[in-house]
Length: 474
Image 1 (cartoon, rainbow, N blue to C red):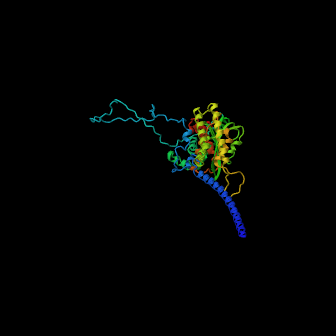
Image 2 (cartoon, rainbow, N blue to C red):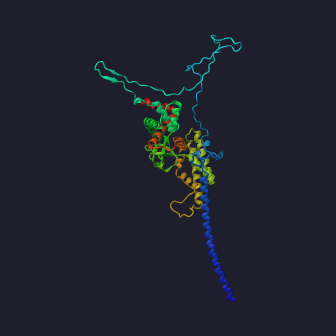
């Protein structure tokens, strides 16, 4: 009996040991599954975040949203950031009658409508004037220069009159034609083939696409000196906006950099994205791309429109309350800045807003540090620890606090970098219409001319008249 009990106890102990081993294995497996589940949830949230990206919560352009994508009314920040902003639009002058018409057509009745009496030669009792404004029939204006060789009565030497620079060949196109080709190409983004159609259909001028390309290059050379002056002025400006975008040249991706403000625009073509402008001072506004921080003797102001879009994405996909509070804070700060005429509010208010900013960022970092670490599925941990999108943003807001809130303390600093983004937007239209540039020379010509036209438009000048004036000044 005792022996059976001992055997029974030994069997139970053996069974208990096996169960303990199995339990430990299940616990380890459960812990691994929990970690895997947390990673999969994070990956799923990241994929959903990427899938839900559009122009309202990322830097993607509005054209990528598609026609079928319906946006919530409260998602777009465009109307909020423009609230109270009065955009200066050039109002067209009313069409009034002119005292000196180019042509007058007299309309006289030949007979009386009532009795049929002949009215030819009768005096007019009343004259009513109506004027029609129209374009004259477009046609080429041909100027013939005749150089006369005159013999000197004193020494017998013959002296011929000198032809102007625009008449170097027996037959050629004039400066206004070349200026209009550059205007069509770099201001209205038309390709050479379509410009050739316009000149043929509208003016009856047969111009080959290759000739039009040479016209654009010729005008760009004349505009280079003006753009160099524009860049010198922007270097010394108290605040300038910087940005860059891809530019496809001869089948490869190069870059177009812009530096601009409200009155000037300068573009530079480069094969390297990280090739920064040199010789700048004052405040530079940008989107927090790291190479901008390699510039010396400048102060940085970050684009809060970018930050707001990132916050919207975190609110939608990570459901984080700190992002909601930060969004409200930035929008309230923007409202104070806008009400002050795009200038900082009182120092006391700015300091209060800064303290609230610090508290929000501090709470956000504590929250993310309390969450389990993200571990990529099926990969060993190497390099930096993977972080959530919200965690990365909170760290950036902490590190770049002065640059994010510079608009609250520095009258030179803007709230957004939208000026540079607007200045780059039409370059994408150029590539969509005309495709990539065939040579680096063509890309540089476009950068020079588009900067010239943009500067003229910002300063309230007629871009076409300004480019024509370059020939007169030469």
